[in-house]
Every structure is written in C-alpha cells, then in structure tokens.
Length: 151
Image 1 (tube, rainbow, N blue to C red):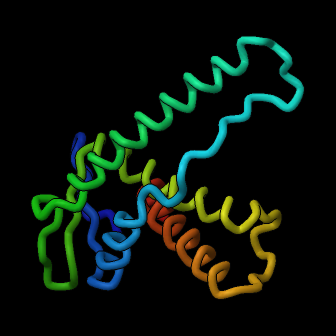
Image 2 (tube, rainbow, N blue to C red):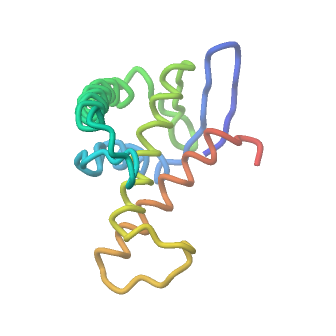
Image 3 (cartoon, rainbow, N blue to C red):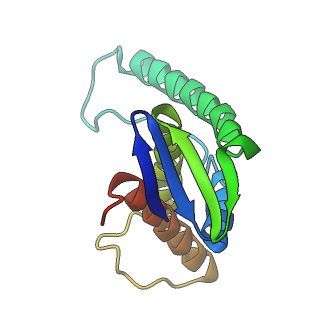
C-alpha cells in the first residue's frame, strides 16, 4: 500500500490486488468484538458511576453503529478503481479517519481476544490465537501505511 496522491482533503493509495482483497476482508470483520462493560476505575465509589457507565456504553454503541454504516460506504465501488498493478483507493479526510477507526477497532479487538499480551511477541498457542495475531498485524499494517505513508 502506497500513498500516490495527496491533495487537500483527497488521499489516493495504490494497493496491489492481494492488499486490496485483504483490506476489503478486514473491513468486513468490523465490528470485531461486541461492546463489553465500561470500567472507569476500580476504586470509584461515586453513586453516579453506574449512570455514567450506562451513558458511555450507549454512546459507544451508537458510535459503533454509525461506523458500521460508514464502513459500507468505504467498500463502495466509487472508492476503488482498477489500475495496472491492482487497485487505487481514493478517500477524503473523513473516510480516511473512519478507515483508521475501523482498523484500530479490529486491531485492539484482536489484542483483547489474545488476552492483552505484553510484550506482543509472546508465542501463540492455538489456531484461533494465530488467526487473531494475523488480523491484528494486518490491521496494524494498514494503519501504519495510512498514518505514515512515507515510511
């Protein structure tokens, strides 16, 4: 994946066909995990904490639903053009940010599914863990290329 053009609020990336297929596959994995309980603090005894947790959980769920709808738009044919060496993905600034949020959700969801390992280099023990590690690494690859296109 390579940034080929950035002009104002338009970003165009060249992806070879396998990269394009993988990115489209990743987008279909969103949301990777279900929303779990929100935890502010282990020691917060304020009686309003339960109400705050509920409001935050509702807000996160609403945001995630909005992202799901926007993800469908990112998969649209108008964003992808065939090229000699694969596909061109054209995004505006908002679309780029949405893609980053979706990829981050997948990457962090995989990390949670792996048990939040520190360091990340810990060996995987099962096929499911291997799959989560691969998804996490792929999402990170695309995030890195969106954030640091010259690297």
